[in-house]
Length: 404
Image 1 (spheres, rainbow, N blue to C red):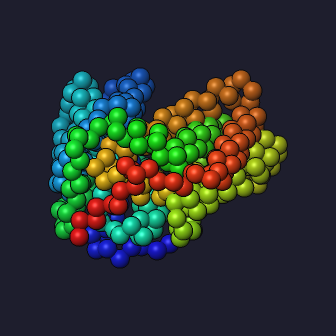
Image 2 (cartoon, rainbow, N blue to C red; image 1 turned 180 degrees about the vertical axis):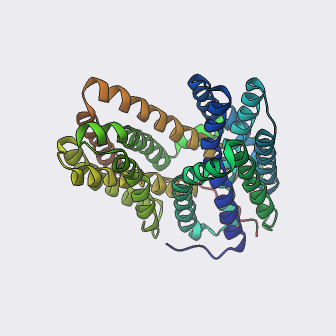
Image 3 (cartoon, rainbow, N blue to C red; image 1 turned 90 degrees about the vertical axis):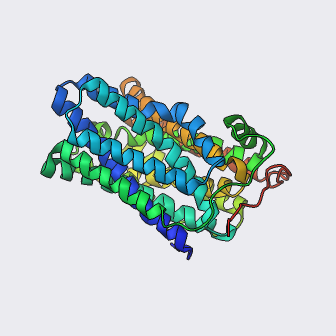
C-alpha cells in the first residue's frame, strides 16, 4: 500500500487516526456511561438512536456547507466542538435530557466532518494519487473500528466511563491541532448556484458509472452486513463456538477487510478499479455462500466470514472510482449522500440479518445474502461492459481543484 507523498495529506491522515479512534472509543464509553448513571437499557438504546439519526438527513444538509467555506477551518471547528462536548460530558454530572442533547449535537457533527474530510482528500493530492489516498484512508477507518472499541473499553476500565470520555475528547482536540497545520487551500471552486443535496443526487443519477458503483455498493454492503451482524448467533447456534471464539469470528470480517484494502490494486482508470472490486466481490461471495450455507465446522465458518470481509472491500473500490468524478463545488454534499447511503445499507443489513435468522435460520440467511452480492456483482459487470458506460457527462467531468 503506497502512501501519497503530500505532506498535507499525511497530516490529515494523522488527524484522522486521532479523530476516528476518539470517535469509536467515545461511542462505547457513552453507552457505558449512560448505563452506569441510569441502569436503564432503554436509555442505552436511545443513545444509539441519537448517534444514528443525523446520518439520515440533518448531517447531509449541513455537510453541503463545506462546499462554500475553507474545509480546513470547518474540520478544525468540528473537532474542537466535539472535543469540548466530550470533555464536558466527562467532567460534569449531567441530567439525562442534557446528556442526550449534547450527544445529539456531537452526532450531528460526525457526518459534516466525515463528508468534508473525504472531500478534502481531493484538495490535497494530485488526481493520480487519489486511489492510493483513499486506500490509505479506508484502511485507517477499518483499523480505527478495530482499535476504537478496545481503546474505549480499556480507558473505561482504568479511568471510568466519564474519565474515558474526557480523554477521548482530547483526541478530537489533537486532531484539530493537526488539521491547523495543513497549508493547502481547501475552498472549492465556486459555481453559479449554491451547492445542495439535490445537485449531489443529480450527479449520482446522471453519471452512469457512479450510479452503477453506488447501487452495487448499497447491495453488497447490506448483504455483507446481514452476515456480519449475526456473527454471535451464527457462531453459537451453527457451529457451537464459545464466547471467545465467537468474538474472534466477529473480528475476522473487519480484519479481512483491512488486509484486502491494503492490497487492493489502485492502478488504472475508474472503470478498471471498479471492475476489479466487482470481481473481488464476485469471487468472494460464491464460496462464502457455499461455506456459510453448509457450515459444519469452525474452519468453514471462519473462512466464510473472512470472505464476507473481502466483499466489504468493494466499497473502497467504488469510493475510488466515484470520488474523482465528483465536481469540486458539490464534493462535500455528494460524499455526505454517499455516506448516508452506506449507513442506511448497514442498518438495513443488520435488520435483515436478525429477521432472517428468526424466520429461516442463520445458515440460510447468510447464504442468501451472499447470493445477493453475487447477483449484484454479475449485473454490474454486465452494465460496465456496455459501450457508453465510460462516457463522462460534460457537466460533471470536472478536474479536481488541487489548490496548489
